[in-house]
Length: 314
Image (cartoon, rainbow, N blue to C red; front, top):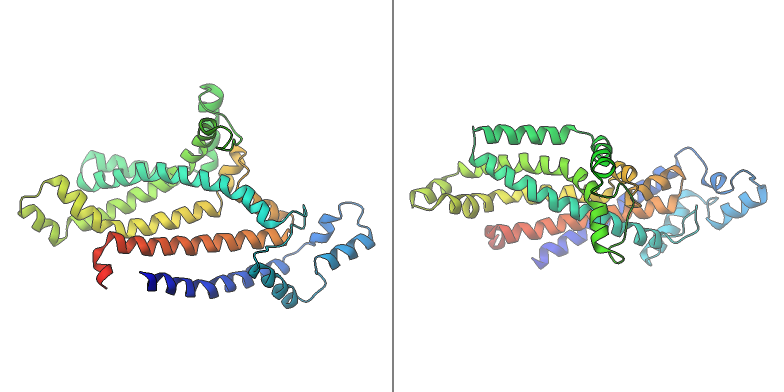
């Protein structure tokens, strides 16, 4: 397992370098000038010159890139061109919000999607399978922003059960924080649980038709043992992959959901930085997202080995 982790880390280094080069270069060719946005309406030539020199925007792009990557190697992601706040501080403020939202959404999705997928495979050809497939198709078809607005109107405005928007840190009030994040987590989990249900159903149908399942049934094993111990354990491989990918997408930014519910998360920070041409913030966020995907891929590989004993011997 140690060799596997080491190989993944070695592969991750050139991947991160390539991502940083692409993001850094593509941002520089976008239309718009961040200095003009920073100088507001006055746009004093002396101020513009000072800002360009301060942030080294007059240097050639390769020189800017190597100066920036040197800072990144030292753990410094630079300063925000818009607010003059360290990028690491901005990310440290916003990332925990999105992590909390993503974890809550993923817990709901796993708790709904995987059991429904298992039952749909076990009850193949019944009304339950038809209803589960209809629910999954509906979940994948409903736009997140529309569902979020609908929940706000019903649950928050009409029924007054949950807060309509905002964010409360768990350190201040854990119960209120969970109540505030419950509706956006439900909105995000709708699509994810639909994907998990369909993939779990497909994987379970394939596992239930395998020879080892027929052998287990022939030996007199109970149906619950056959389904949970034999079929589900072998069907978990594609499910683990899907869960890690979907969780990475959640961390990359549930932009619309955060916007609808007024949550100051990672996605909103990225969108604001793109519109403001805040190069350092965009580059820092993309690097964090890339690192997160690579880390989740590594976690998936380790889980493969834990779930499937055959890979340990391989």
